[in-house]
Amino acid sequence: MISHMSAHPARSLSRVLEDLGPTLLDLLYGGTEGTFEIGGVGIHDPHDEQHYPPHAIVLGAGVRGAEGIAEVLFGLRSHGAAALVVRGPVEDAARLERAVAETGVALLTLTRGASWAQLAAMLRTLLSEGDVGEAGEHTLGGVPSGDLFALANAIGTLLDAPVTIEDRRSRILAFSGGQDEADDVRVESILARQVPERYLRLHEEHGVFRELYRSEGLVHVPAPALADEVALPRVAVAVRAGDEVLGSVWAALRQPLTREREAAFLEAAKLAALHMLRFRAGTDAEYRLRADLVATALEGGAGAIAALGRLGLADGPTLVMAMGLPPGEGTDHAHITAEHQRLAAALAVHLSAVQPRSAVALLGDVAYALFPVAGDSADVRERAVRVASNFLERTGDRAGAVIGIGSVALEPAALARSRANADRTLRVLFSGQSPQRVAATADVYVDALMLEMRDLAISNRDELYGPLARLTAYDAKHNARLVETLSAWLDAFGDVIAASAGVFVHPNTFRYRIRRVAEVGRIDLQDPSARFAAMLQLRLMAMDGGGTRAEGTGHTTPTARRGRLVPPP
Image 1 (cartoon, rainbow, N blue to C red):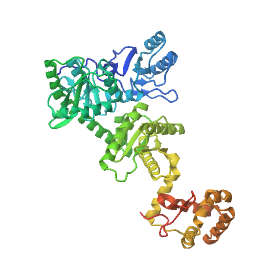
Image 2: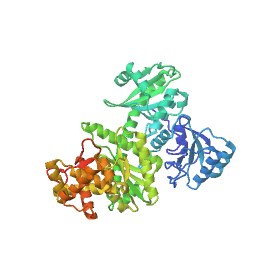
Image 3: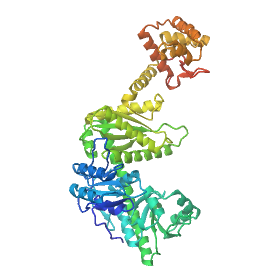
Image 4: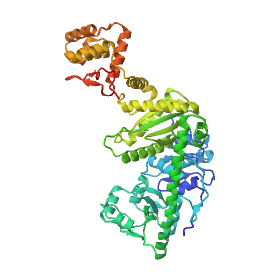
């Protein structure tokens, strides 16, 4: 039975370095003996107001040179940060060693080849920053219950080999120290949190996974031969809970295991099952709790303040982001749900790196994010749009996700309105009224009003009245294109030359048609109120496919269906 436990407290800086270094991090200067708990991860942005959790690990992406690093270190002292991570190599060591000594902020370097996104995601996983429940004191086999990193370190100690714990899809859930003693393939897997696809294919071809998931014992995998890459042999064991395969544990070997270590590895796999079940149960419970807290906060009622307090969001303004996927025709519902969950999890990681106090939960088919901001201003809303746009750029446009950003809630009671505005914005983006993938409420306010007016017209089963009704009836009988003419004239602000070019007719022909519009429709085109009424009706007629494209032109002509202002629901 495993009895090894880390000597360092969970969520401490020393524990972070034990688990992630030197695969991802190296300590350059500073002490790790402090017993304080790391509060989360922050991103240094010199162009934005900084908000960090207590004793944060701050990622200094883009911070260069001894002068710049020292300046950031002194700035972080007032925030009570635990450490600053910069990209190595670092020059002027003496200057920085003094700065670290004066500020008490440790200086770490990001390992060559690792990305900031990888580090942020791994730190968030290790620190369990989203945990809103109570920490437990339970242990399994001397290892804190559900702590897969501690388990990986314990197994690695037993085997004297670097170890990874993987799920059924070969994603890295946790890893032991000493990964730099393995091979480049293992390091690549750690950085990507996923075994490379080329090796997965090789294992499939040689039946490694088939043997692994059928066997009750160890599976020895010879060093794979792939191009010029050099890799160590592996030994793996499946992790089972009854008939269910939860994943596997893999060790990279420089020398064969002794009989005693093989027996210990098999015993460790049984214990790993308990930890993986506890980890999964804890993750599921945390997700459900977080979703409940976010939902309660979004309702804006009496419980909102308590929910925001448990989420750590009760002390400042917040806005709501709403992310959704367009409905896919013929797409399997289970696939859509999985895609929603994947994107919601990715959004949580992205926002936590930008603003650690963010909270994300998937409610129905919409992922809602509570995003802390510094007041209510145009700059604040623009920053939220930039953050959301950056996320969609990273995820690509394959899923077609869009994000609506609500108004700023200066107090908990205003969160319900922020959510409503985010939902309104999301609807505009789905409707095709806006070409954007991310928008704030202020950007699409008029489009949102138009959609709501359309809803009202459908509810009332409104029919066309006045000039538009007469013009539509005349066009249906004579194919005169008077509605198209009026629409083009209004769009061009009465400029006949521009309007006629838009519908590809001679200006004199267009002048004749616009006179017929006034005569047939009995509309005074010099009257601003009449023009506004016509423009409003035309806009409603053109929404949701209510318009047809005139043959040979690029102009969309609104049409009415069975005399209705909008098509029936």
